[in-house]
Image (cartoon, rainbow, N blue to C red; front, side):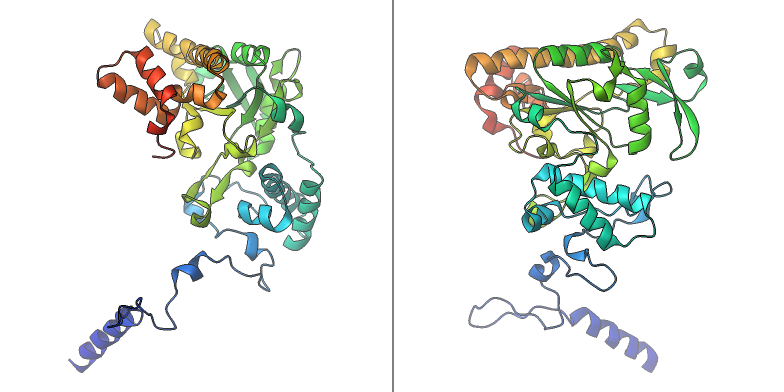
Length: 378
């Protein structure tokens, strides 16, 4: 009994050590000096002897939350992008590119120090060096920007029996392990890129997959007689090292590595992302979610309706883009606003209006006339 009493008292003491106490005068509650406060939790960690980059680095994610944890190479830390921008005077695109350079340097020079890798990455980013030879001027001047995801959006990488007789590309990969991959392009993928380029848009590829195999796949894809990354309409190729996290001090926390479209258009007025996976995004007003392209089903189905579903997915997106561009020109509004009814969260508003009795055309017109009814986040 004495032992039990001691344990109970000890647990009660631990539970009450950080209880805030209210003042009888109405002053704000106070806490014990040992209790952490909200402001303490939001303050970036200072440099330490073990990590001189702690002040601009976000807390490490647990390995169980990283799908690539077993194949990651180098220092895959996530930087506090807003902190990099503020401290080093970088634009968002260069701050995110610093993260990409840093990871590359940590892989190529595993014996080097984090501080040295950071200094080299900072020098590259400050000089405007982008690994993908980013077409910065094209992005700045383009009437609109369409960002495409790759896997399950523009193509599918697959390995089963169907792949042997149904693939457009075959590519040797060395990372994450040596393998030969077969790729089937989604129906209408090449035509979609051609049409967007003809309309004056800039095209960006943004994959959440590893950079080396992604670039290898794209270089095997001939677009306009060139490896796709070299085509003048392709303004950039971004990969998993360009995914970001966002701490709560900078807005809604982003805890799953995600594609930040502000890298390409800080105002978010000219850019949309076409992607089958909304979990890798956090700007739903600018995301067009598509049906996942499954090459095995597409290649093996005998169902004409299912084949048509896959064959109409990308052409439908292109038709929406063309219609939005016409509206933007006729009504002198930005492209993203014109495309809003087709976006992930704008589509929710459009569907709700249709459920309330509006026709599809009337619902689209209403969302465009009243964009304030569309939330910025879920």
